[in-house]
Length: 203
Image (cartoon, rainbow, N blue to C red):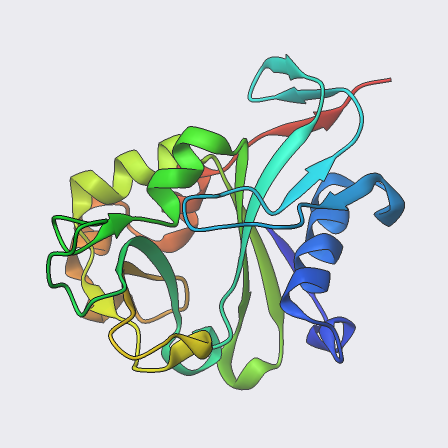
């Protein structure tokens, strides 16, 4: 986890924030971080980082990162881990017979090497960059079943009938509202230690 001054993100788009956060967590020059253009529903890689890496003990030729800029974390103190979405108010359609499709974290498990959150502390005084192993994070969230929530109507420019559902994972000191975290992990720090990714640049 990195703690940074949130002013470094001032004036940047979500895409630019994702690129900057990726550069910070990998230690790579920003010109070595490529934003993936033309993303569509079902895509779960925002950036590619050039170079040779040791990722959780295995060597990879590039880092595939899915990043989430959680603007509302400063208000709620949660990381919103999206896992499904609808474009029809959860009603079945020809394209989505179940009225929904998986999104966010489950897709990152299949496509990405790391899963990054950019979040904010109380009143936005500090910004945090959390870097998770998507498989470990998803596994723990499935086992623990933190409270889930829906995005608000029109959130992120969504059209009417479009919503996302995700787990709310508390990262601030509000664990008294989440007894399953206290019982199972003791704190968010312990949870993060269990689900984080280890990353090292190789020569």
